Amino acid sequence: MSIPTQPAREQAEETLAYIRETMESASTFTGVSGWGLVGAGGIGLIASWLAWAAGTPALLRVWVPAALAAVAVAAVANVVKARRLEIPLWTGSLRKMAWGLAPALAAGAFLTQALTVQGTPDLLPGTWLALYGAGVTASGTFSVRAVRWMGLAMLALGSLALLRADLGLVLLAVGFGGFHVAFGLYIAQRHGG
Image 1 (cartoon, rainbow, N blue to C red):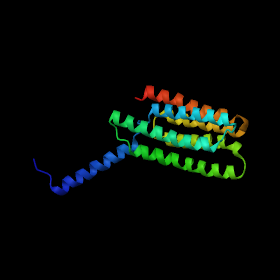
Image 2: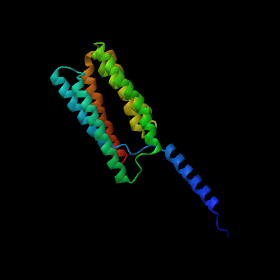
Image 3: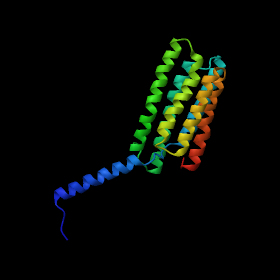
C-alpha cells in the first residue's frame, strides 16, 4: 500500500469539493419554513384589513411595510428551521431560488412605481400577485413541490385580479394571506416545520 503524494491528496480534495458543490446545487431546498409562510400570511391578512379599513386596496404605506415584514419573518423562520434540522442554509438550491424570485420582485417594484405615476393603482393587486406568483413558481423548481403550486395559484389569482380589478383587495387577502397560511401549514406538516 502506498501513501498518496501531496499533489494526489490535493487533487482528491478538489474533486471531492467539486462533487459536494455539484450535489448541493442539484438538490432541492427543503429548508423553506412552513411556519414562516404562515407568519407571512398572517401579515398579509393584517395588511388586507388595514387597506380595507383605509378604503384603498393598494395602499402603499400598508403593503410595502407588510411585504418587508413578511420577508423578515420568513427569513428568520428559514434560518431557525435550517439550524434545527442541521442543514446548510445558503446552498446552491437556495441561491437558485433567490435568483428565480428576484427578477419578478424587481419588476413588481418598477411596475408599482409606473402604475402609481400613471394613475392606475387598481392594477396593482393583480400585478403584485401575478409577478410574485411567477417568481415563486420559477424559484419553486428548486424547492419542495408545494412551493411551485403556491406560485401557480398566486399567478392564477393575479390574472383574475387583473381582469377583475374590483376584486383586488379580496384577492390580495386570499393570495398574500390565505394561500401563504394554507401552503405554509401543508409544508410545516409534510416537510418538518
